[in-house]
Amino acid sequence: MPSGDPLVSIRCTVYNHEPFLRQCLDGFVMQKTTFPFEAIVHDDASTDGSAAIIREYAERYPDIIKPIYETENQYRKGTIGRIMDAAIHPNAKYIAFCEGDDYWIDPNKLQIQVDFLESHPDYVICSHDIKTYYQNEGRLSEKGLYENFSGERIEYSLTNYFDGWWTHPLTCVYRKWDYRKEIIEKNYQSLRDDIFYYDVLTHGKGMLLLSIMGVYRVHNGGVWSSLDNERRFKEAQINALQIYHIEGDKRAFSVIKTSTISLLGIYKSKGRKDLMRSELLSYFREAPLDEFLSLISELFRLRMRHIFHKLA
Image (cartoon, rainbow, N blue to C red; front, side):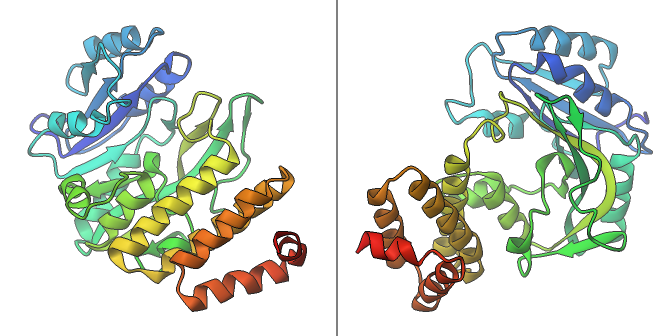
């Protein structure tokens, strides 16, 4: 790897990822680039052997692996983001993400994405396609997430941000900016991925490359994959509602509506009429009239008329 200040800083958060961590770190050290890069690997007080693996790689690859070891869990304190931000080299121009349970499979990933951003100054972020590994089944998906799209790339911006999930964190390289400070100053109550990448795209366009260059791992210990569907839909709903309130973007209601319909179905299956009634009332209070009427129309289209009869 060339010497000098890193052009790219990789943010890697680790918590009890011992079974997966070598695969993740191997994805970093195998990168072939014409520029220096670093990987900030933050062990958040793991109780397994994750810290020992990080030490091993830091000793073998001191120019790449820059470790941080915690004795108390920072995720629970809400301080992990600030710690990672402070550790990034001040001269780094780009930031990449990959958590310790995911991994990259293309040794040219960083070079390809940086080359794109360097030659396209009006783009602020570049992502790519991935496969999914289902840990409990020991199965890797045959296709990428975007196999049904034609061409080599998909441009995204705030215009089509809510039409698809273009920004899986392990795929993203973005121009360094103090987005965290910006989001906090806007009074967002959450720094979840969908809010973070929305804010990134307020500064320019994004490009999704349809090459498969990484793998997302689904397992019981994953922060997102371990959540049940009810919690996932509720979080998506809450975050989209924040975007609507703070940014005034009505397009966020495509997510809010979808999440609301899914939650109504979940509550119905549980026989929780009280939660169904509360969900509809909350949507009515928040949504503009046209969005509320759109929800009603969609519920009827889905043959959910019985919901209203039972709640009457």
